[in-house]
Length: 200
Image (cartoon, rainbow, N blue to C red; front, side):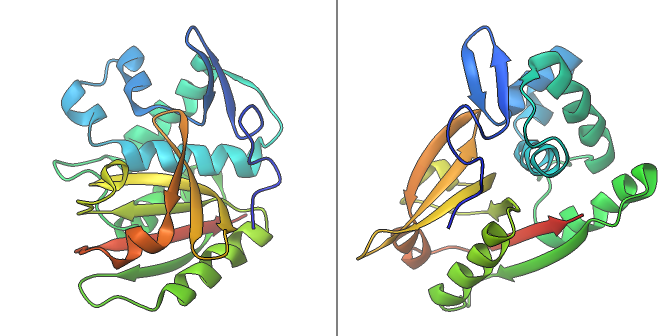
């Protein structure tokens, strides 16, 4: 299952001096005066910005300045702390400021786990339910020793592909596309993983 606009150049394309980004890049908050300390803790802010703009501006090509207007506004509302925005529950709670300011419903759907993990099939079903409705899924994860891109990070899932003997996650992270073996990610030791998507 995949978003309608999941391909590079179609999923939230952002024109930059370095080419077209695949969704936002948290370091672009430097242009808005955000320190490196808080940029490093703003991956979930970027993931939410990506999900929001896909839902509301799906077919637009953004300049970096246009993207950063939203990015910085959401940064101020979601207020990452020393541990960033650590869980999907905390993200959903902080999104209340955006719901109120923009008069939006943004109904949330949440699945999270700590040491005791749910069956992989339940997570696959959850992600596919969202993608079938053309809604991006935000994934927040703490420890990921085997798949480094997912270590203490928040990303947007744009595709979940059945490869036969495993499932492949396609994600937007740092303005790039990454492909991850979801089965390998899921079976490793993890202390927290949360999934959330929003409906308009």
